[in-house]
Image (cartoon, rainbow, N blue to C red; front, side, top):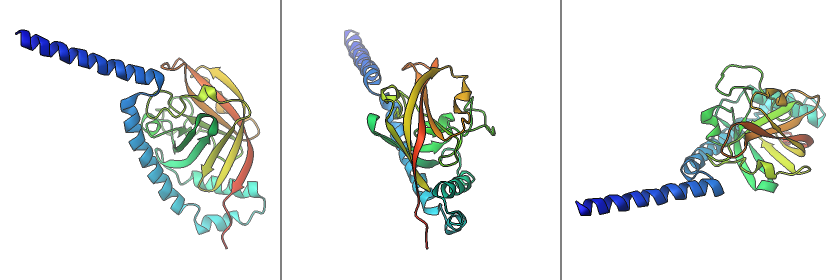
Length: 237
């Protein structure tokens, strides 16, 4: 009996250390278990992005875009055509923020499954579980607000340090049809119900959102950045 109690006590102490270690890792860095799973799903998003880049823009897409001379208009044409091709959960581009050492594939959609793969583009504004809504944010190059959400503590926690981004920092979105550089203008803390943060404001901007404070979904930390530069894909002969 004494031996059984000794084994049980050792098991409980070990379990306690494991739980404490997991909590400490989550507080200091990211949630370990979901991070491993998130890395696997990020790899899947990267694979789907690679397949998408092979298919888009097609020669037909480029022929249509090449009919307009202005680079911004050309990119807008490609962005409009791209928006018709993507599916929820599919990797659609890369987001790079040097300030927080972020270089991740982002996916289409902010539903639960999509955000486990990485940052998600707001195809639905408001409750991310509501499918079929048509009030989503724009794609880069369409000249309107581009919304993106990401986790702060689980599934790679891509936006964990969103509050460390500074005004004036660059945020780069690499899309199959062009590269977009945005300059951070301001930060805000808002309630989750304030979906108007991704409304059209007359120019293209990027809106990043994440839960705030850490380990809570009570509010949202929001970063606003204005489009500064566009590099279109090279026309094909």
